[in-house]
Image 1 (cartoon, rainbow, N blue to C red):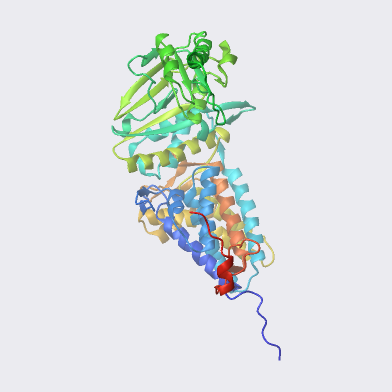
Image 2 (image 1 turned 90 degrees about the vertical axis):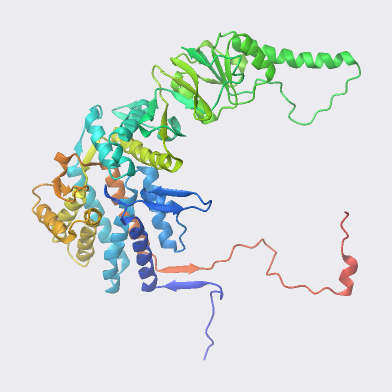
Length: 555
């Protein structure tokens, strides 16, 4: 008889078959359970201790999962889901995990009955297509310029967040900032770049009510010579530079040998003339404020202060780009290429203010700013961080509306409508795919069910009543009021969700569930690649002959 053959090395661990699928489903369910209680307005907060000993208190699904260190590969890919959702649409990070977890949970029964995973996936993909069709049917378009509608939508999206207790404040900040930086691309499309052109400046102290959207930018810098330069200029002419205003040092080390003493003075004079030359080229345009990303020498500082020009040095590139967008200046790389058109004249006021211990420069009251800064105030750092996370979500939601102005009902109503429609449709599906399709329809109910659980109402009664209302398709807008847990018409309660967010949630959740279901093998313990030629190191035994060949290293 032949001896058993070993293909994989001993250190590898391999799991295969249904055991893996059960493990994956288990891991996904655990991931979903972590964030389940953070769904809806009555959600709980999670407190996380990070590696540096800092604490994060939040109920943003993505922020929670991002901090977790998980071992199981399936749980890792679940965490990726919430990150994708956050980057793509900025909201619905919790729903995506809960929905994906539920999709996998309902698939478990079929795997036990020896259904092939591809059959389940085929049914799921069909369910996804049909659910997007239902979304298209119930979505209603809105007018982006009608502020109250947009405000209602952003409010309902951040109603589930910690800052909802402060009323319209965060929603207003989000809408204001996204309206400022929106750029019309024509054909009714708007491009809103949140990352580049909206800076959130967090300054502890004061009250949250002091937070505001500046019609311009602020940054944590003071003028170079505070005593000599003006700290407040009305209607400043601003020049933005991307070059040092100091004497150029040689790229590589240069030694100059000077024989005569006078040569030394000539050398110094050259340096001074070089700087004076640059300054004169800049001052020719009569600016009031010169900002550079690089250094600014004392001499240049002297010339500027003599001419009554304020200067700021070593500004971050991102901040410089924002100033350019806000006041209409062009960032110039070489002073001798300056033109009148490069000067920013759009700002109404330059001012340096002291907030707390730090000095902040404000360039505000811009005519048509295409960049802005949101100033957040609050009692503590943790508090402001949480407000910032919520603000990011709110801005993303506002951005989605400007991009695609369509709404669907919130409060679990969309999911219930999708679920009811898919259940009816499942009757027309032939063959073995019918059952997983129906299960996927049931899985959509996870969202309203979780909402009801978090409100603390009788889940079974509420769900049965809601299913009854939706089964005959009378009103697609009936859902759960997240605060009271009662059934309500979402149109009247103004609880809405962005179409983009919902569609993305469904797509991400179902596609991820399909991907995880099709895994049937997990091989772990793969060694890191060794450098070529270095085999496993064996202990070497020195012989007398080797001792002579040793190289003696110099001290």
